[in-house]
Image (cartoon, rainbow, N blue to C red; front, side, top):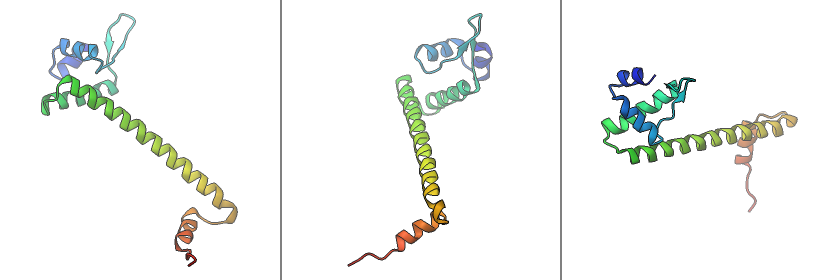
Length: 115
C-alpha cells in the first residue's frame, strides 16, 4: 500500500502519486482502488530514488533512463534467444556427423585456404 511504501522509502505519499502521474510507476489497484506495489514496482522505485536522490537526475531524465533500460533489457533478451536458437541449429546440424559443434568450428577455422 502507498502508506507502507512511503514510510519504507521515507517519501511523502504525494511523491508516489506524482511518480504514477508521470508514468514512472504503475502500481496495480485492488477492488477498493488501493494502490498495490509489487516487488518489481519497488525495484523500479529504488532505481528512481537512486537517480533522483544520489545522482540529481530530474524526472524527465529518469523517464528517459528507465525507457533506455527497458529497451536494453528487451534487446538483451532478443540476443539471448538468438544465441540459443543458433546453438540449437549448430547442434542439430552437427549431430548426424557425430561431431560436437565446437570441434566443427575449430576444424573450419583451421582449414587451409587455397592460394
